[in-house]
Amino acid sequence: ETSNVPLDKLTPKNKRYKIKVKVKEKSPTKYLEGKKAFQKLVFEDDEGNEMRGTLFEDDIENFKTVLEHQKEYIISDAPIRNTNPMFRHKKGDYYLSFGGTTTIQSLNPNSGPIVPKYTPNAEVPPTSSEDDRYDILGVIVHLEDTRKKKTRNGYEFDVLNIVVVDASVQRMADALVISVYGELATKECAKLASW
Image (cartoon, rainbow, N blue to C red; front, side):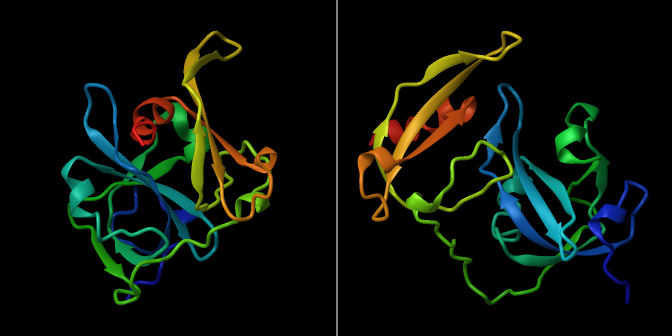
């Protein structure tokens, strides 16, 4: 039987291999204007190595219940692709794609859903790092109007602040303010505005 390969040892040259990974992140389905739908995943092995994965179009629905957030899997022979050189600095050199002879086996098929470990709003530290992740549960008490901002080189983007509270917040001044940018501030948050 083939032993598991660490993610940092995989390249597009690997055709027959097996990895043991956890789905660390699973983004909502996104649509590029005039382009096809895609969904991004981040896989992590037991050594803490990460590799991104991407699902397109029909595969998003096909793998909806196959690859669940925070669950562990043995994945064999998924095609490994080169990351677009523009994105390598933050996404790594390679990513997993799915198709062909890919096999996926759940390591905990009867475990039920993974429930988030919610962080009380008052304990979420001020941060702006895209690597910081917190599961929160709260009530939106204010949704600002979307506004435009510019980067130093003149690129314009949308930004929206969302004010959230939970039982850990004693004063409104301590409410959690979440800033969202780009398409997340416009398309995704439009659903919140109708409440």
